[in-house]
Length: 326
Image (cartoon, rainbow, N blue to C red):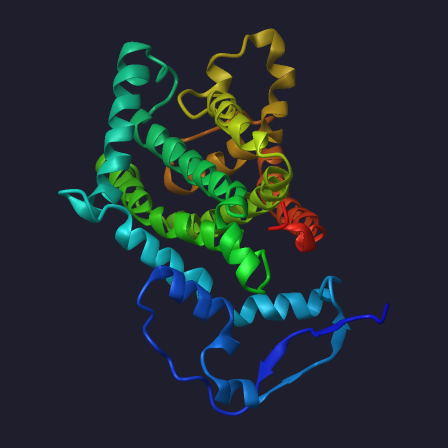
């Protein structure tokens, strides 16, 4: 049987396509994922770098360029989803700000006042808020990535595009939605007496590193969930365990017996704990960790996002041709 060949990647030459406002989110996604579908004039002014056998993965360089050329999808579609998320509620998009406020209020009442887990924490309210918001952001991002393939089977089967765009757009959406929580963090640390300092600017790179870690973990789980959908059912339990083991509601060193202090640096191996601790360090001058833990936090906080992103992307891409065929 003769080998079938397909074009690796179209590259526009000359004028860009005429932009049209999509009438539905589905139309918008289709247009941005497949730029060739806009009009025949653009198709006539494209050329291809080379041909590859049908069913074979694109070379990495071509794949990354294809992702970049469709970057508009990863921005405009999440924005549209966020705008319509609370459309049918009375308060509408105000819920993007109310949700984190109510969430922190409940945790502060139950754990801070009733269970007194604030023992040993000088400024418990921002300590709690930073932990809850940061963990929630990573959890939602990873969960959205994990279901991004199985929730878009129709799109995958009808259009040819880099499947990595789906987890990427999920993380972009959650990062945008994280904005009100970030603003609330700054307000809380300011009104509770924390010093305004230059390290507040470090929130930006640490948020980026959290996004990198979440995307990398999401790449792995997206492939696993596509193969075995039961993985998605286990995630809530794994995240609940991680929530209580990541020092969100209490300071680890305050509850570890003295004879076990030598084992305390092990907690820095938890990427959630490491990244959240760096967010607290950036915003709170009163936040301190045990001296034996601090050096490991830097190693974990910088290494995990890179390892997960690179390794997760390669793991996800290795099964690119199988997505949507289940």
